[in-house]
Image (cartoon, rainbow, N blue to C red):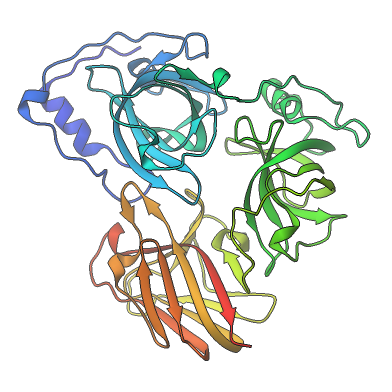
Amino acid sequence: MKKLVYSAIALAVSVLSLTSCEDVPAPYTLPTASENTEIKVAPKGSGTAEDPFNVVALDSLMDNEFDANATYYVKGVVSQVGTFNESFGNITYYIKDEEASTTFYVYRGLGLGGANFTSESDIAIGDSVVVAGNVTIYNGTKEFVTNKSHIVYLNGKTASNSGTSTAEPTGTGTETDPYNVAAVLKLYENNSYDSNKEVYVKGIVAKVGSIDTVNYGNATYYISDDGTSTNDFEIYHGFYLNGEKFTSKSQLKKGQTVVVCGKLTLYNTTKEMDKESKLISIEGEGTSTESGSEAAGQITTSSFNLTDAAEWGTQTLTDGTKIIAEAGTGSNSPKFYIAGSGTLRVYPGNTLTFEATKNIKSITILCDSYNGINYTAQGMATASVGTIALNELTYTISDINSNKVVLTNSNTNTGGKSQLRILSFVINYAN
């Protein structure tokens, strides 16, 4: 472990040099001189559930060698609360050792036992927590991986007394004896799964991430043994029953019991069933899908399977509608980035054209929020046809009555705040 020496100069430099997962500065101010008292905290813990690291120990570990696939546990107090993402139920925040200076970044972490947060008030500065998850270093920032951490202890409340999954591994992975989710996750712990072999897994749908009924007909969803987001398992871009395409968002709902067949894989640090899996059975009524009501032409930007940092260019939907992203008067071309939930970045001066085979009635665009910044180009997007309005993270272009509309990022500033970062579109046709 490195020797920890803190001084006023070092602390100021560390705050100035802290970067986030994105290309924007962290939204906090420098400490005052009275806060720059030298603090020395000894590293403690082994990083397990029984003996969590303190923040200094985890920070020091990452200066040497760490396992990106391992789940580390760290104990600390919440020192700053950032963005609450309502769409995905996560919060970005920082933790530190009590009265110490070193902080650790929890990027888009989940709540107690892996459940979604319901509001930014679910955690507060000064809360005592134990956080578990995968860690990484992104552009120099030591942090927990997006949506791959959760709180296991919050002010005396633990995952074990809040109804989290305690299922024992069962099943052999066959059609007649499918794995439960606990058994699948155990395979990853032991690195004993065969990525070339199809297996059967049974679980309860804990969350429906997205259902693409327009372009590829696949869905990304999460299953667990108890129907909560605790110890859930991602089914990435899977197909419907018998391998058919999804045609309606009502075909899969939270709370339904499913058996799914596919190959297991590890994408970066994400344990998941690889694309092109298929549902074998669906039981139960479930509840309404989290991705919203049925709408004509609902598309997530991640459904086009673009590689990271790829130029968007022209993407054509199965109904013939084209979504064309061009540089316009900007110096950078619009690009898709996988980071976070996957977004199309439209920079100042860029244009986004929707060109359909029939008249468009309205377009709804959901933008991303990160670290306290809403990436809506600060409300300076303009539409060539119709009326455009911004409500928090959602742009609505209404009264279009045309088969073509051009959206322009008319912001003339530079930097992250001037970007549009688009998560999804909903296109409603007039006929």
